[in-house]
Amino acid sequence: MKQILFASSEAIPYIKTGGLADVVGSLPKYIQNDEYEVRIILPKYACMDEKFLSELNYVCHFYVDLNWRKQYAGIFETTHEGVKYYFVDNEYYFAGPNPYNNIHEDVEKFAFFSKAVLSALPYLDYSPGIIHCHDWQTGLIPVFLHTSYGSDVFYSGIKTIFSIHNLKFQGRWKIREVMDVTGLPEYIFDHRGIESYGEANLLKGGCVYADAITTVSPTYASEILTQEGGEGLEGVFSMRKADLHGILNGLDYQLYNPKTDPYIYEPFTVESAIEGKKKNKTALQKEFGLPEREDVFVLGIVSRMTDQKGFDLIAYIMDELLNSMDVQLIVLGTGEIRYEHMFHYFQNAYPQKVGSYIGYSEERAHHIYAGADAFLMPSLFEPCGLSQMMSMRYGTLPIVRETGGLRDTVIAYNEYNHTGTGFSFTEYNALDFLHVIQYANEVYEKQRPHWDDMVKRAMEVDYSWDASAEEYRKIYDGLLDVED
Ligand code: ADP
Ligand code: GLC
Image (tube, rainbow, N blue to C red):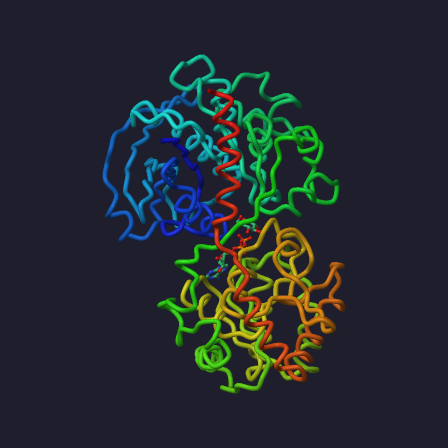
């Protein structure tokens, strides 16, 4: 059996702040087969739901060497949907109401986590062929493997893959302090190692020392090679181009299934979508305190409220959108205060047209995916994006900017040959965004049969993990073969 260990700072159902959790919590199920077993290791955060914390079983504990410190690490385990999960326990690092704090604390916290992951393996009598690391929080795993464990035979056959879910977050901090908390040798902190623009950069460490690098869509894989999309690391990616792969994320089709979704008001299939969606739409309007009208064009947003997601474009067009069109806008999200306030303001100013919930709610998210007509995602950049795929799965047509994974997943409507699964615009420009919403509204109003066909087409596209899981297995096989 080939053994793969996923190391991540989040995974559903245990802890989630964004799409990383969806991916890490669903992909292993689809990679596992007769040949592969995947396990997952996460921090044991105090902020996890009590129902999850109480089901974890203690396995062992040991001490992690972090330079002059020795820190306690406990390992707990559980099994969820056929996948084994390990949790690293340390009440000092993983306390608090959120998985992430400020960058200073997080760099030390995840340096500890990364070293604890490696230190745990002999105690667990578990030697995975590959450790698959996700985002900067696990960037030091390939670095420690190369340095602190380089001469230990237990670790000598282990390969690493580093997956980039979002290059915006790199885990950058002062070299002196990262040296102090990691105890890594000085040569690691030069420009061939984890140094970048005068700072230590944990994501760069992962990218330099891992055996292969992946990112979450083919378009993002090519964007990060450019100055515009490389966030300063395009040189590193160019050097490692031969080992860089863009593999599109998938969805967990068991969780996101309009036919069986326990959250939604009226389950539906492709055949019953047009009627089923109407019922979900009026239930959604009621939930958000808006007039229950089947005929109005309902736009949905489910998102972290940050500049990445194009909220400045949304801010720019709000008045005109709401004044010029018969629409309702339903928003679910949290993030930057200025955007949270913006939706409060517009909800007060246009109570018949705007409904918002500032907060996190899995249930409300599903209600929006199922009940809206169109879904707004005008991202500035988007490594992959899962929300647009979720909305398509529920027949809600995405209106997106053509960037990263949005470009790879949404095919723009072509009114001449009636193809497409949504709407898109190219430049990061508010008026282009407004025009494409107006155009979508026009298709909705005046070409309803074509709109309805597009709803069904979007639902029928296969966004499951099957094809991408196979691509990951190919990369694993390539790395494991080197060992044979
Ligand atoms: P990102 O990871 O950049 O935030 P993705 O589109 O990949 O973007 O994934 C976002 C995930 O987080 C989706 O599962 C989406 O439904 C979920 N999500 C975002 N905001 C909220 C919220 N306020 N409440 C519930 N789910 C949310
Ligand atoms: C990141 C990206 C998002 C991607 C997700 C899962 O949060 O912003 O585009 O879908 O990771 O890979």
